[in-house]
Image 1 (cartoon, rainbow, N blue to C red):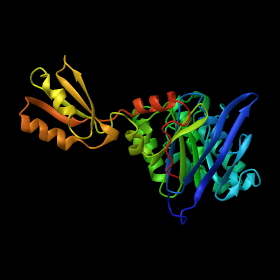
Image 2 (cartoon, one colour; image 1 turned 30 degrees about the horizontal axis):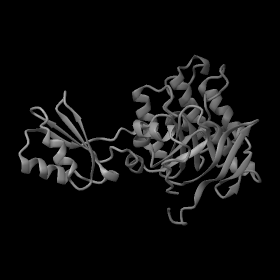
Image 3 (tube, helix red, strand yellow; image 1 turned 90 degrees about the vertical axis):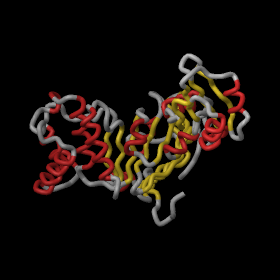
Image 4 (cartoon, rainbow, N blue to C red; image 1 turned 180 degrees about the vertical axis):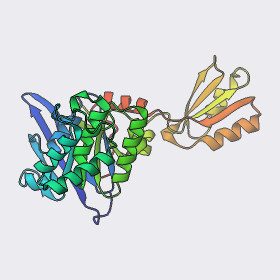
Length: 325
């Protein structure tokens, strides 16, 4: 947990939301601090967008509370909402307006005078890199550019907190790179919550990740902590120039810290599974060198976060959960 000198910009406590008899969000709690980019992940229908709508004041929770910059969202909704820039799902906008006109309209709605509103709109246009399409009607824009217009309106008033629902949705690889660069740049003095279903975003821009499944928080931690949940964390892959001798798996299983050895005879490969994710590369390397096995390659296998994500979102609610806040 970070020091109290950096208090939570957003504090969510025991949040639940029910629609009739359906519980969309179930007892979710977490904190987001200034200077932090927090990835909010989960399968479709897991409760991500509902949670973000509650945080931004669009929906009222059934139970629980949200504090924004120290303000209770229920008791001081206007003051709390002023602290937030929100990119909602779908980024709704007036289709017949140009991006430029729409952003000037947003500036006026937020209370800026004509001159300051124009300055704010232009600054947001430049940061979101909208220059080529800024005078086109929004309805004529591609999905990617519509998302960028949505991001521009979210950052126009320079809020200390950003809540971005799928900010890179519909962007091509170059646009994704630009958007991630913008998010990293803004993260120096803002608290940013990003909803996504793409685990690639965690490594690209996020300091920490939350994973929600069936309305419940099942993970809260760093990318490294997420990787450690994999049974293949620190697994060692060995490939050979010739076929696998029967004694190879036997000798490897006898090593301290080895949980199992998986063989792929067709590829002449062994995967050495580490017990509890321990680092076993040194003892495996020493064994291979001592026995002079006909080695082609030996390396620590990279964990596929998609596999971890599937495991913890398909398991029982709460399984594998960690908390770092």
